[in-house]
Length: 180
Ligand SMILES: Cc1cc2nc3c(=O)[nH]c(=O)nc-3n(C[C@H](O)[C@H](O)[C@H](O)COP(=O)(O)O)c2cc1C
Image (cartoon, rainbow, N blue to C red):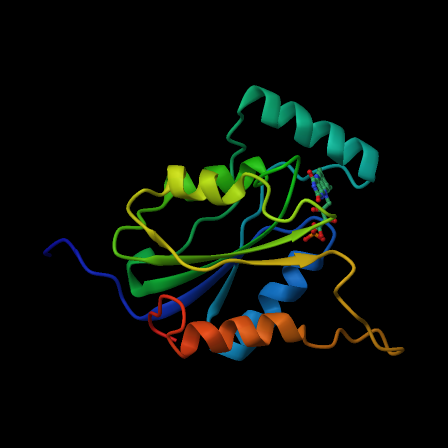
């Protein structure tokens, strides 16, 4: 079979999330675009307590670690557009997202980054994405503060309006547009 040199038109919504914010936003993207959800999950889970998790994450960053992931994307070639959703961890991507980005071939694909954060917005993450995936086009990103996941009194998360308008901008081609 001939090697596939082009990207398909499907949308992948890849997310890493420890406390649920990036997961919620990724779910909204998948609903609004019809994209496939994929969780970037480390084989060894992070501790459940905030202070232990931040400590473990800092150590990984200091070691420039590439923690193993428990699953990989099936048939990456079918996707042309990747929404990459992640929390800001110590100023950039969690190290498991480094593992994910280095493992995939992003030639001919567009990555739209979405960061959720406690105040530092993207930090260095956009530069890191571009450095790790030089073959990809990086589209306009969106940063969402971690207090912007409003829940109603039944616990159901309401759609984030900034996210919806970001998707509209991408879809209308006001920012680099592909496949949605
Ligand atoms: C290990 C760790 C490191 C973090 N580092 C930062 C940081 O450097 N800057 C920041 O604004 N928020 C930081 N936060 C806060 C998270 O980015 C924020 O709460 C985010 O919404 C969590 O997303 P999640 O619920 O998908 O895990 C950190 C949180 C954790 C657990």
